[in-house]
Each structure stands twice: as structure tokens, then as C-alpha cells.
Image 1 (tube, helix red, strand yellow):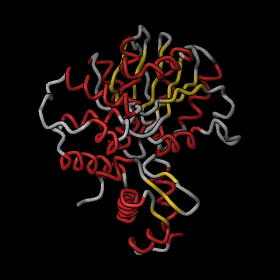
Image 2 (cartoon, rainbow, N blue to C red):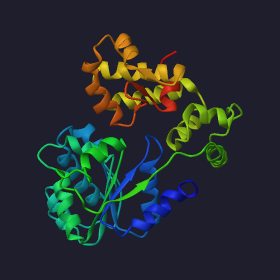
Image 3 (cartoon, rainbow, N blue to C red):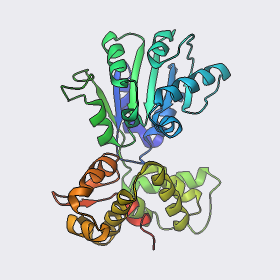
Length: 315
């Protein structure tokens, strides 16, 4: 895993632990990294996509997970919210607790986009995980973030009120590529793929627009370096997770002013959205900051990652 050496070193160091949290900025390739690492290992594992489960069943995440787990094991191939698995054997289960009890061998249960577990109704996944983490038996939990602040807030490993407080968690941080690594990554991806073409822009210019985000660096090449197509991909992805016109408008305003000035202050946000800032604060914190789409620049200013500043606002 050429472009995940640091991440691979971290995960190998903690692989025998029972409570692992994979963090990092949005679009750095956290899901890809954990999937490829497990495929190349000889470990038994199952990867569950909590965001897909949320899209499929909204608050009834457990139902989506169990239904698709049964189908996947029966078909011996991933179905729905199950994105990958190896050597998982379990029979006679009808909920998440009984699934874990039914596992016959040591297994890594990987929850991708695990921050979306917070929307689950009828089950607290943290309580279930805590039971098995404390046993230190056959189940290893790996929680992979979509939005890192949201995941850490939900799991609460430093929160005395959380079931997972002081459970000896280990962290694996997935980082952005540096400018020089980005150039090498793009060169290798172009060389090994079918996307060779002559209109590829300067690599450092691409870095300035996208940053070292492996996920969208790949997508940019795949759409022929067409900025409008990349903008459409990005907007469509975000519309799957952002709820409310005001939240969407706030994100657009912060992205536009980040591109122009490097940040947006609360007065600009109030003026452009037409709402009192106190009424917008909740959506900014819960929907944007927690999901890794906006970052505080100071007490009264906010900014977005490079890719949003460049490609989110319509021309």
C-alpha cells in the first residue's frame, strides 16, 4: 500500500487491540485504506457501511445491517451495506447482539462511516461494543470515521457518560498527501489506469485546488480533469447527507468566501443566508463541523477544505 505506509504502520501496531478508531479529514481514503488492508491480511473480518444503512433504513440501521448480513453470508458475497468480508460464519441471529454471539471465530467487525450509528433507533451500538470490548475475546471493533468530530463525539472515549469511556481505544490517523506525494500519486494513478490523456493540468495546481485528498484526486482524473463534472460529483455526494436548505446555503457561503478571503465571518454568513447567526449555529456545528465539511478558523470565522472552496460554489 504505497500511499498508506504511515497508516499501515499504525494499524499493524494496534491490530491485536479490541477498540480501534480510524480518523482523518474527509476524502483522505479512510474507507479504501481499511478495506485494502483487510483484503491483504489473513484476518477474518466484515465491513459494515453505516452511512449506507442510514440511507436505506434511516433510524432503523440495525435492521438494514442484519438483513444484509444474512443475505451476504447466504450468497457468500457482499450485499447492500456489507461492503466486504472474509471467513465470517454465523447462524441463527436476528439482531446485532446475537450476530456477535453467533460468530464462530475471531473476527474484526469494522463499521465504516461509523458516526452514522448515532442515528440508530432501538439500539445503542456503543453499549453492545462495550460488552465485547470488555470481554477482550473474539470480536475486535474498528470504527472508521466519515466525519471525525462526529465519530469521536458519538463514541465518547473521553466522555464519562459514554459506555466506551476509558476502554483503551487505539487511534489510526489517515492523513492527507503532501504536495510532492500528490504529484507521485497522480503520476502513478495515470500510468496504471485507463485515464491517460493530454489535458491533465499541472500537478501542483491540482494540489492547490483539491489538496492531498486521495479520493477526489482519483475522481478528478476519472472525469477527464473536467472541473464541472467534478463539481457535480461533489454536490451530488453532499446532497445525500446535508438536510435543510439553510445548511446547504451556509456551506456554499463559507466555501465561496474561503475561496476569496480564506474564511467567512459570521456577519457575512448572516447577511448572505438571511438568518440570525444564533439560529444557524446548530446546523453549522452539527451538520457541517461534525461532518468534517467546515472548520472553525477563529471564534467567529469558518473555512472549508480546499476542494469545497474550489468546486462547491457555482460559477
